[in-house]
Image (cartoon, rainbow, N blue to C red; front, side, top):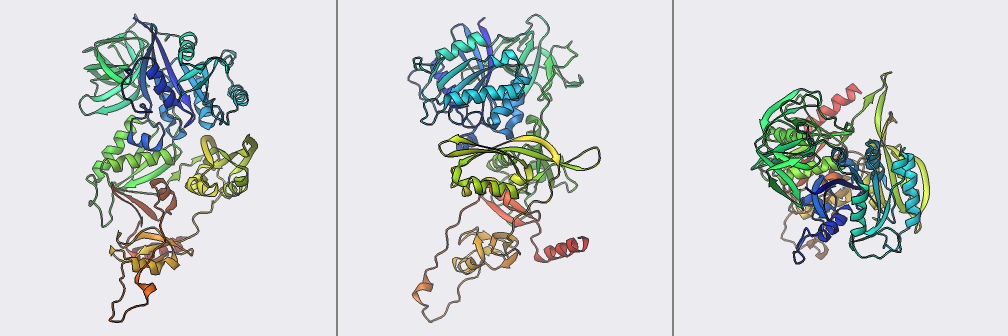
Length: 608
């Protein structure tokens, strides 16, 4: 049998992981010379293609000489760190990919710290060295400093370096070497990454790290075989991290990675990364093995969630008009299935039974979940994100703090520092990063960053780059100013008219256009003052037999900018919801009836 190498590619978002894998697949002969292949073939999901990010870890394999290299493409965004942590347990080496201009970024630090703690030895690939603003020597120094800061041992500090352009498909050991193909990098993987340290003669054991649900095969568990051999129809058992029996079962299908496809095989042995089907209950972090096993394979602890939202049944007047999955049972089953396969997501039923509290790593992760559900036909109501607080030994509240890195043009640094200071952020470091840009480092409460992304892009004219990673828990930083403006609330159900909206423009900024269907309690705009205002947006122009002045005949409304799902979630207040359906995103008050809102307001005042 050919030798094995198991590697993961880790990097910050948009540093070129998936593009490099495309080139590796092409040059290893995985694709025919005349075969038409999508770019970024590993980003197979619709959301991944639209947003240009990797959300789910995926496996592939290539052949180089007598070696089969299993490659895992990992997410580059901190919100999907649960995926990264799991897949690192499957590999024996990592390619650390760093942009030649941007240098090591927050996610580089986050994932590298995990890899070094596991004793993995990275191969450093400085990518995009042909960028006009590349600064290769400075970036290499920054990488070495990062290794030192993360307590890398001497063997890890002696890392090999390759210079590459994943897009153009070449890598070189030295900057002035011939820039021809990726063979130097393949050689580096062959020589520097060790074969899996496993025992092929002891009973079969495998650690499940990824769970998928297939409509034909059922539950598919992917993981690395730590010992022995597995065959189709073999009797196995699954045990959890405590060594307790989860189930006994039989393996009905073994799938191995060959190129970008999974192909059925009759047998696999220790060291390989495979997928198996046939078990009904086993899940992520469970050990699957021969009948006699009693000791589970240790799994990496996963960082706890820091943010939560409440997802509830859509009870608006438009419920069921645009989606096919609207009941609380359907929502519950979907959320529980998500929590089962994604161990960084937790789901808890609330007392109301029609609402579920969902805990996750951040706004992006929770937003991706909701966006995925709406595309599957779900309708739901979503609350504003909240951070998860903890208590220390003295009973004082602690809140999650994010380490925030901002790369921005010098002229915009002042407004960024001012805005983040208002959100209780503290500037830790400020240094030039070339090309009249500066890199700012802050420690900011996670709740202070809810909804800041859109504001940041506006303040920096779309040129700023903002990255964040979880820093730790610190004492509660006090109140952070929230949205200053009230909202414009529809007082009737019907179809909004241009004439009515034109008359409302002086009251504030509108969120809807004419001919939009609206209902009582729906938010249609932002009030110019700090109080909420109920308005009539369906009123038509009074008809008379006298011709109006010409300027009144054609009503011209100011163009609106539609908010994304994440922007909507961060915009709303505690007494508001986002109504999400397959076709629409609407803002609304939790209580649609104005009298109920007034009663609730009086009750809150009396308590206060």
